[in-house]
Image (cartoon, rainbow, N blue to C red; front, side, top):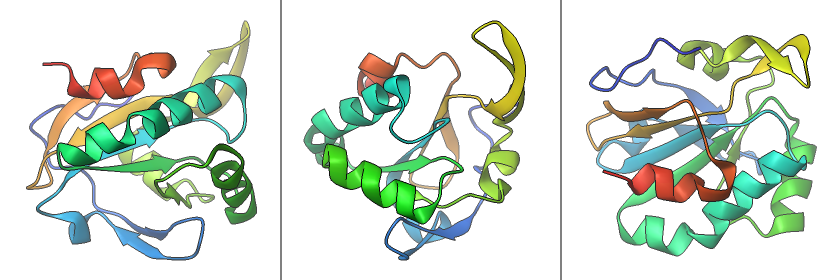
Length: 151
């Protein structure tokens, strides 16, 4: 659904994580960022994706990546999700969908055969200068980290 393409500048944002810490893309210049959007905390596919990033976190950070997850869940839900699955990376607040809309990942979709509106599971790999390096629209939740690292 997103129209963003590799080579474009990633939309900047400023928000907080599950602990109220400020996070902005601009402050991460000089680092590679994995910004992944997912529909909801503690649901089967979203949990599989988060745990894949958790299980590959050391490898990703050793290659210079910062991992950030984004959904529309509340701070309290994010805190429970992080604690339950021991996630080592921040989950960002976006209840008003500002970041989701900037990245074009919120909109109509089919879910279990029904038309609905929500977050399209999408991953953006952002380079050290803030440009999109990769846009993954067909996310394999069980192998999300591997998709980030694929040539």
